[in-house]
Figure 1: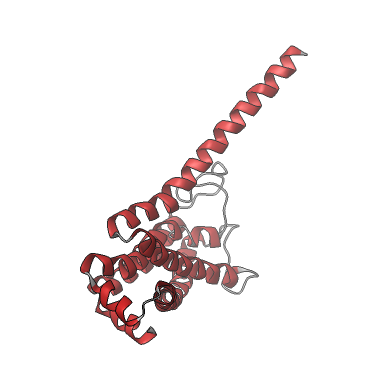
Figure 2: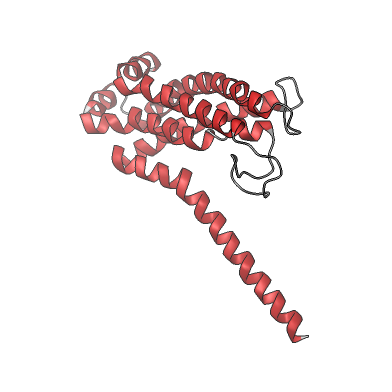
Length: 214
């Protein structure tokens, strides 16, 4: 089963292209963030010229936000793509139970994404670090926690790819699964932050009203 899924993955024309795009985005945005960083900006903003307080690792992992949808789309295409082409019939004929198929697909895409993005994260860190030369936030690969954080980024992207596989199997439609993936990865976190900000504003206004009442 694993050999079959391995062959299917590399038969996807878009497979290696999407992987390359994910690594490219990881490196590109880390480099931009490193070279446009300005110390003393308002804390809490996004990395970059007007970014907030951060460190070299945080800037190096800026591209994870943009690489994660690419990794997830790769997983979706590996699973939901079979439903659109009809290949799923032959797959389920050979292996009637869906769960082993799901595990096999995840076992193929996960390690591939893990290896490539784990290699891409240190490359992103190395390309962005020269832009931080002389800054207080500058770090090296040998500093405590740096390699662990970079490896964690690779693990996260591998899990996103495996999640894309599960989402594709669940929805059985590439377009719907990709739209759901983008919503979960990009829109939902922003909505959560916005809702938290509105709740905090309401609480602050309520506290201010109590103070004036006293």
